[in-house]
Each structure stands twice: as structure tokens, then as C-alpha cells.
Amino acid sequence: MTSAHPVVGSTRLRRALTLASVAAGTGALAWLLWPRPDAELRVRRGGRAVVINGYGVSRPLGDTIVVGGRGRRRTIRVVNEDSVPHQLALFSVAPGESRDYVAPPGTFGGVCSAHAGSGRLTVVVR
Image (cartoon, rainbow, N blue to C red; front, side, top):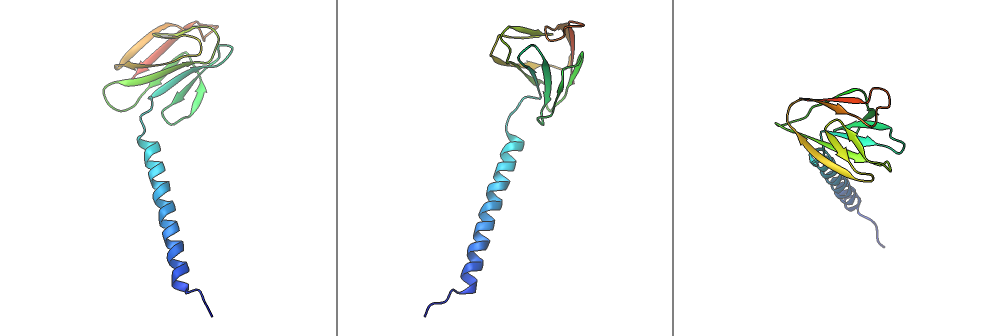
């Protein structure tokens, strides 16, 4: 006659829950600390551009973007998913490529191929 001891089942459950919470905590910590750009400018097919902040929230590219973050310099990633090269103020990127730029605090402006109307973009780095 064999019977399962109630403590053995409870110990296994506790171990499984501990392992799951350690894995979830490690994943969350890695996501928070993983190096990523302070901002991402992504040009979609057809020349439409969006800005993605450091938390992954995207919005359409306006005439002025503000880039914030930590430290003295900001990393700005420019991704071109279009089939033609694009110039976004001081950033340029070839078709199908991605480039990381490091910018000091300041206000920068220039020609923007993703703005059909104004054709200008101002980048404020804080």
C-alpha cells in the first residue's frame, strides 16, 4: 500500500513556484537593463516615419522630436524599412539598414525626406 505524502506534493509545488518567480524576475530585470536606444526613428515602406521611445511606445514623426534619457549623451537609432535612402535632419540611412547615432545635448535641425509638407525636422536632445 503506497500513499503520497502531502508534504512531498507541497514541496514540489513550492519549488516550481520559486523557480518560476526567479525566471520571471530575471526576465524582467534583463528587459529593464538591456541596452537600447533612447529613441528610434523608423521609416516604414512608403516613407512614413514613426518615433519609438525607450519604452517601445510609437507615435507618428512630428516636425520636432524631443529625445531624453540618462547620461551625458543620447543614442538614437534610425531604421529604414523603405526602398530608398532617407535623410532625417542630421541622420541618414540607406535602404534596409539601421544605424545608431550618439548625440550630445542640443537642438539640431535639417532636411527630412519623411516630411512631404515641410521637409524639415528639428531634434531636441536633452
